[in-house]
Image (cartoon, rainbow, N blue to C red):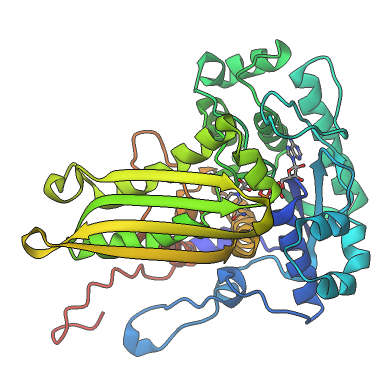
Length: 439
Ligand SMILES: NC(=O)c1ccc[n+]([C@@H]2O[C@H](COP(=O)([O-])OP(=O)(O)OC[C@H]3O[C@@H](n4cnc5c(N)ncnc54)[C@H](O)[C@@H]3O)[C@@H](O)[C@H]2O)c1
């Protein structure tokens, strides 16, 4: 039996549950609703607009991705989630200020019906926020059980056939890997003992997996990047993926970096700074949350440039990343990159990038694709870390001992080959032998 015959059909409703009904998740929800009504188009989404080449170039086969692999339809998506504030998705989208009021009015009823469930939250892990709509319980295990009850309730209320959870809540403070994360036994003891190493996002991840649903981490938090959660996902045959949606400045870095490296241009320094004024920016103004983000953003260039293999080009590169909270910018982030490069005979040059981007506009299609491809992974019986989805993350989660791939072009090849493999098509290596052989 070929692989594709093992993929279950995407029948019935797919519930997408998000801890964090903020700028990113409401931009996603609004976009899906607007697309369904024919008001807008899902630009930036590979699952909706992408095409994939199959076979040799001479075959001229290039179907849409969604016609090639069996994905859930936008009409079958149902949204739900948790937040530390009571605003429904319409109110939250208005606050976020990403989308025009005109557009939001046209989908007001559907968005207003998406009301948050009370969150698992602890201000020790996100210092700048003071939520009021939060669950209270004696232990972290009780909180996990409360989230599991929410999931069950949502599933019944909305007649969901399948579900998954995507973390789109605020970035938590930096947490070091410790004993409590080492295996599921320690982790469960930690939940009962209220171990400080277990943050709210880990409680959600645990609850999702225990409820039999995949988990994706869109923020740079440690969350599912710990042996205990990976072990649980493998044991329960569930896919997980993370972390930190690749948008904005890091997206540009993983587009530019591979190009400079491909031409063996050296880099003396890469200075990146951002100003942004949304709630995410406010949270990242706290040193603990910034540290989590900084680690995620810094790791990217090393893996692309491989300074250990090209010390003369990249070993002395000075890489600095800054994020500054600047309220007037709102969700319209501005990010600058100053790149000091050198070429033939060491002659110096500079590249300046000024990206006036809209973070949530870049993030929404990423979240949509992740939801649909994670659902595909689950229906295909793929368990554990889904490295083929690295394309969507700043800090791709990989199996232990493997170096993550950050180069966006390699990530895209890996992603497409995974889809071809799933559907029993030949992998494409781009190894064209010009006149002698067709590729
Ligand atoms: N926008 C992007 O391009 C992008 C890229 C990569 C990662 N991210 C990450 O995605 C996340 C969401 O970004 P955003 O711009 O939507 O932020 P946001 O501040 O608008 O939304 C986050 C929401 O999460 C809520 N929240 C905080 N802690 C919670 C908890 N424990 N449980 C439930 N809700 C909680 C907040 O009240 C808020 O409504 C952030 O962690 C951000 O760093 C965003």
